[in-house]
Image (cartoon, rainbow, N blue to C red; front, side, top):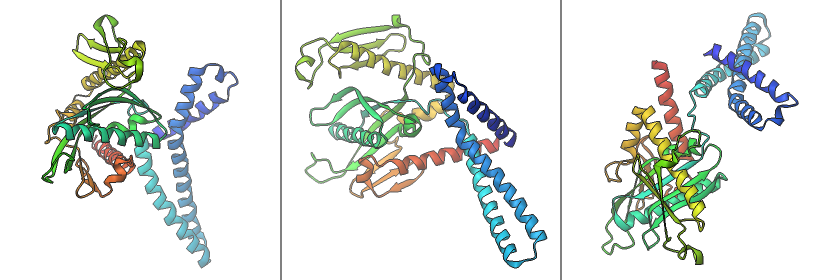
Length: 357
């Protein structure tokens, strides 16, 4: 581990040196790549420097205890020794986590698909609430939300909703949201006051750049049609909506959110790229693909990652057995506690696997 850390310190100093060069700002791509590498390396280099300083403090304190006869000075040295030893333990854990291989998609924007599963209109209403939860969360982090396609049920619910969240680290935070979300509550349409269970599925996909996915436009078939629903004067009078069919995979994407046919076409291609990229990732990581399949599934009640129980005001994440009694604030976008716990559990599992290897 320490050899690797020394190499990273050398690389960090090289990057800092390159950033000082007068002509570096002339090449925007190189400058951006260097800045990203510098920000990635900085936390681990800082932690390693502090670790070496603490090691030095331990040696100095031990030497002082051997040589010093003054009781007050010896007490100070013991205090310093204990503090440094405790900090060394903390830093070792911290550095192991920082050295874990990073998901190359972590910094990417995400495309989110929410679909109503079991439960009819009640599931569609809950899908709309979960959409708003993610919008609030994104706004809290100053990320941008852009609707791509929406299929409403007429009473304020969403049968299906596809949207994009753009912002630094969006995928790193939201990737754990993929799966079946279950709601337990008395629906507004229920006269007998019985609690119903409904489900929705959430799929989180990293946005794919053109370099990530080879897309042959000859494999794409575009149909245009008139958009339906609200949207002002232009929406229903021109053929602005687009249906994109990817012939080799059979993937179909409809997009009618924009008034311009060209913009709808661009958005549909974005979703297609993300889906094809996800298929590619699934091939690369068979084990992960199996996990994802069991998460996203069919929207059946039995495959759940999280339950939102309204009568008890609680949210339970079943993967890490975490229950929080603050349903309202979570639905208002207060997701950090759940996401931080999921990240910590993921890191712990990766560290355990690394130690096994």
